[in-house]
Structure formats: C-alpha cells, structure tokens
Length: 325
DNA sequence: TCGGGAATAT
DNA sequence: GATATTCCCG
Image 1 (cartoon, rainbow, N blue to C red):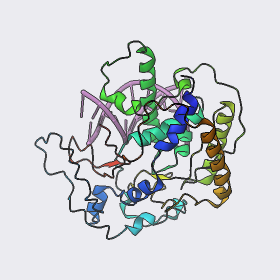
Image 2 (image 1 turned 45 degrees about the vertical axis):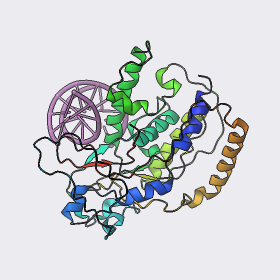
Image 3 (image 1 turned 135 degrees about the vertical axis):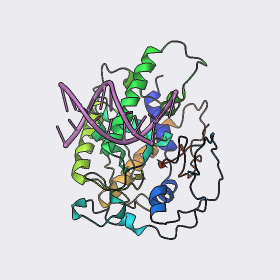
Image 4 (image 1 turned 180 degrees about the vertical axis):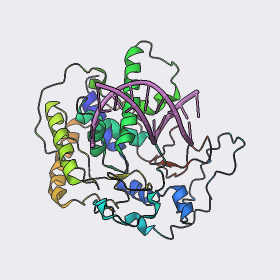
C-alpha cells in the first residue's frame, strides 16, 4: 500500500521482455494474410505446439498453414523504408491497400500501455501521447484510443466495485487489465503529488517522427516531474506491434529495432549508463525489502502469431502472448 | 486535427 | 459474446 510506487515500478522493469524476445517476434510479425498474399512462409517456431483449440464451428480451414517454414524472405519489403519515417515518398509498398488486422492487446502490451499512462498522468494520458510514449511500432492512435476507452471503463468499474474483494467472479474482461497493476492515482483522479524529481527522461527512439517524440517526451517529463514519479525509464527497447498493410500518415512500420542490444540511439548512449547506474543504486538501496510472492515474470514469452481466431479466419496479430492462464 | 464516446464489425 | 475498429461529435 505504501510501497506501491516503488514496488510496481521495480517490478515493471523486470517484467519487461528482453529485446531478444521481441526482435524475433518483430521479424515474424507478418500478418498471415499478408504472408499468404505474397506466398511467404513465415518462420516456423516449431518449438511449442500450443494448440488453442477452441470450438470449431462450421468454419472452413481458417487455420494458417502450419508449414511455417524458415523465414526465407525476411520480407525485405518490411524494411522498405520505415526507418526513414518519411512516408511521403510514395513507396511501392505492396500491402498498401490491405486493411490492418485486429490488434490483440496482450498483457505485455497492455502493461506498456499502463506504464505510459501512469507516467504521463491522467491529464496527459491521451491517446496520442500514450502511443508515442509506448513507442510501439505499428500502434496507431486509434488503437490506443480504443484501448484507453476500455481501460477507463475498467477503472470506473473498479471504483464502483471496491467492496467485496475476494474470490468474486472476474470476467475475462478484467483479466487483461488485472494483468497490470493499476497505479494508485489512477483510481484517485483527485490530487497529484507535486513533488518534483529531476531526472533526464529517456526518449524512446522509435520510428515515429522525432519531433512528435520530443513533444511526447517533454510531456512525459513534465508530467513525471510534477508527479514526483520516477522518470519514464522507457528503455530503448522498441516493440514492434505488427507489420500491417499500408503505412498511412502515421504508419511507420517494420523498422528493425535495436537488434542485439538496446544501445541504438547515439544520443542516449551516455544516458543509458548513468541511468542504469542510478537504478542499480536504487535497487541496492531497496534491495527488495520484502518479497512476499514475487513470481518470476520473465520467461513466459512465447512466440505466437496466431491466436484469437475464434470467430473465423480472422487475421489477428499478437505481440507477446502470455501463457499465463 | 485530436480526444472522447457510442456504434458497428469481426 | 467479447473485443477492436470505425464513425460521430465536441
């Protein structure tokens, strides 16, 4: 109750998937339809035959060709020109006219979302800023807006049902949100600590326009500063949401994130160390005063591209599916 | 254009 | 039925 801030914050970092976990995914984040359209064989992660057999109705074989052979073509197209960001170049992107697949909000992705909102503050927690702070490649404002809407409803509901905590019935709806700890101030949009902590907030270098990012970061920094919260230590890990079809105005996709390690952004290289050092200090100081039931969050990331194909052959894209059931 | 909410679609 | 997308309005 009291160490919520530090607690959740500390755990937050640990729960974050390592870049290695994300990179491979981002590479194979080609939507099935897209792959099929181009006759591309997606990398076969034949390591975990996790069959999520729901109930097959009278639906045709919507299942993807499990013959996801090796990633023959890395789909160089994906790296077409994302990094450049300037999409005005009118590239010859193939899947330009295709529609985006439904974005599946995995617990990890949601966590990222919550973190962003937490650091931004309720007031600044608007779709755009959240999206920018999340630095999720492929995430659109609409995605965030929609999710934010749902999340707010969830928060509201929680306030109403504050009584009776026990083994009540938690709809699957809550499951996702419950996945991430809800910051205290989320439920109490009353006052916000005015304590300010100086700290160089890190800029999540994404494929987005740096200008926007700067704005977002500034907002985040301001929010954090006025919220006495620790700086958004959004490491440079970039999360790729997916390779959708067409890059529109804000559709910068397929930008190969910092492969290997995080040290990608030059301007942040130095910050990284100092910030890391700080963190180490904090950890040492805190040293986990109490570890009641801290499960090891890391190590549950399974690569999975297909999921939630319940209704029919719908192209869905999942980021980091969790096997936490 | 953006943010928020409701409607619609899958 | 649930979820994300889309439309509409401030």
